Length: 385
Image 1 (tube, rainbow, N blue to C red):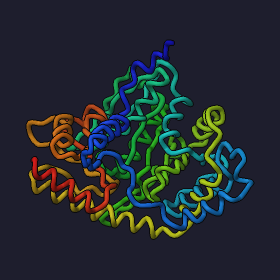
Image 2 (cartoon, rainbow, N blue to C red):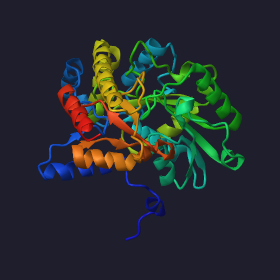
Image 3 (cartoon, helix red, strand yellow):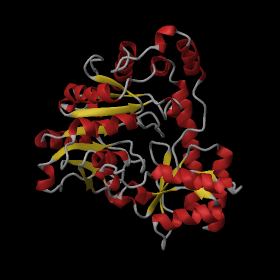
Image 4 (cartoon, rainbow, N blue to C red):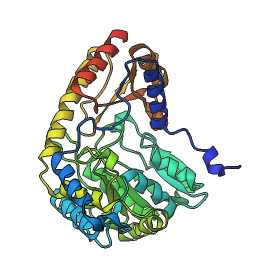
């Protein structure tokens, strides 16, 4: 039995590898603290669960859902976009329900990338940006991301032979894994670049709601001419503690929404309507739960940053996301330091090189662990540092 050639070019999925290491140690009875994966440790808010309980008992929701998402869910997404960002999107043509933003990002490649085409992806970024291209027989050009430039992906020096074959450019701010944020000027520059080169600009805004210190993340769709070339991905996973629910949406350029919708029509049957109704309660209900979550993560960020700096590690007070991005101590690579923490402290962190070539020399620490376990992990790191 011969698998598709593209599978031979796929690197093992980073987070699956982390899960494997964690499970192997736990099977040996080792007390492992995982700071590797961004899976919120708090439960989904009660009002969302109550909406789900009601929706799941409605027999009409037990049938196939609408492929594009229910009209009510798409309208809720549009209403939320207007309330949150002042952005107007047509729920019929400019909004599409997703089974998690990962699914939507992966399927976007199917809609736009032919064998031999390129996608432009940050040299530190979510692995699906490049993995989706590989599965389509495409190539990835890594746009440099440097700390001295605020981890803003540099698209000024893309070779002409790559540009001529580029279909999609991925960026994402607030950024996973670095926590970096982008300016209006950067977004405007990215839009101009993609319009000039006939490239779809895909903005991953999964962390828009997890912000600190008075910062509020924007939508790229706020910027002039954005709808001419931009599709933006939003997720309910982090803000509402709904990672396992697998619900998200894409908004923006109508042509790209239609193309992605065509792929989804043929490859999936849409998300369970009851989950969409719970998501409506999340988007249109009180946002106090989001504010509370931001306060929790800010407190954890402060504790981790203080502890890491106390042992001589360099890291920033990130304005957003649920991660701390830190330089590894001198003499270590990302992999060797992560391995040391795993083997000696029994703490899992994510090696930065797993996010791309410019991630070498860093680790990502997730804040999605209870306060007491997070402090215990920091204590263990201090002991071996």
